[in-house]
Length: 325
Image: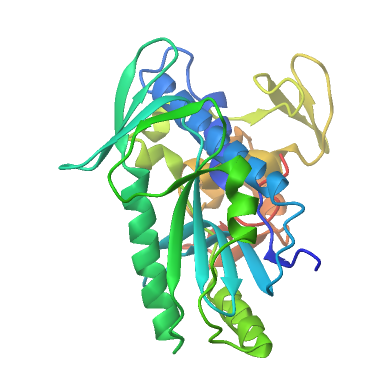
């Protein structure tokens, strides 16, 4: 049976956002280390999820199924699930964690204690609690669709160097390497849905999907606008600025020219600053001299304009090409 994935995983938008924020923060900024840790965590999480995807490449059970990777809903129930397995008998949710070192789960209160290779210990939110919340929310979601499928949820540890020293009684934690075998041999309850109903459920869930929007990152991290560097940065040098010359931009350092470089900078405004931009804000952020130049730039179909001349603001669909930096 061929692997049936009805939604594939893509790189989280927040990774591009954190990279943009670090590029525009001073190397001496007091929040820089925090943002670097957030970027590292985001990359690690995505890496763990990708590893599970690779290990599931040859998943071929003897029961029909659908897979949804990276599912989220923003309205009503705020829900995020790394991987969903839909079957005629039940739904299986997989929450993947890539947290290095020795891991010890405690209860009363529920916490995850991480001890790194260097001996540093940190207290983190319990992934088991996160998993149970996701299960509870998903049950409400499926019930709202008039379907009474049992929901199972399992925590998955992405790499062997994550050593679980203690976990609460009754908890079930899988390693990524065993997930495929566990699911192949899963003791399925009696079938509830027909094949057509299974596919209908998959399409209903996809119709409710909305991509998680972590932006704007600067106010969420208590970073003020005057702490963000302005200008258009070179896509090659990353840290070098570009100058506007005639109909293109030229890097001050490597002399690269790129007539469309301003679009990346404007996208970074939306990731970091606000969900909208005015001509005056754009002129200031791009460090341009003439409002007429900005108006020509914002006429691009990428940007949706709202309001009349005095109150006009521009918006960007943050799902467009944000992962292809």
